[in-house]
Amino acid sequence: PPQPRQDRGRMPSKKRAALYHRVSTVDQDPAAARKELRAAAKRHGFRMALDIEETGSGASNSRPGLAELMQAAGRGRIDVVLVWKLDRFGRSALDLLANLRALEDAGVRFISITQGLDLRPDGDAMSRLMLTMLGAVAEFERALISERTRLGMAKARADGKPIGRPRSPRPSAAQVRRLRKRGVSWRELAAELGCTVWVARQTLAEKGAEKPPSKRPRNGGSRRV
Image (tube, rainbow, N blue to C red):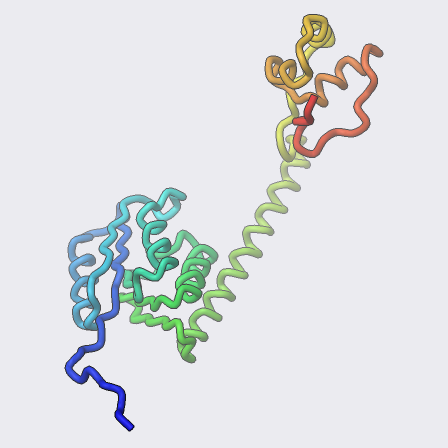
């Protein structure tokens, strides 16, 4: 029987690479780092698909460049991500691990030039080890955050400071009564006085002019009236 035709002359397609370089205020020579990223992509035989430079502190939540990169990974437009340093890809161990997991789920390889780190989505032994170690660091970081939060709340209680969402301002019964007499709905009244519907109704209930509400709504009093 005839054998299927094979295109022997066809070269395998090059992997599509995304370079991500976040420039911080302490970088001595950001141009050199970016040049090294491009050289690394060329050494690996990657084809340049994205070249993103992000400016700003890693503590900032606004990272449109990273968002663009992760979107490209999720849509299958890139095969590998190259960064200059591992810490440029996440604000914290938790953030870094989440980003790496997202790339792994998308089948995207990750390379950090400075650390010589190469995480492959096929789950080779070294990649699994590195992700396990990062997961342990992230869990430790999560525990530290939880402990700091608990200690902060305990100190606030000891100092007599309020904990949680600030209470809604309480209007006077006269203000509430005047608006109700004008036919203003409870929702409109609450918006005008800058309080919740529950607080407004409770204010009149304390004066005996309104049946007290059965319970405080969880959403701060946005019931329909």
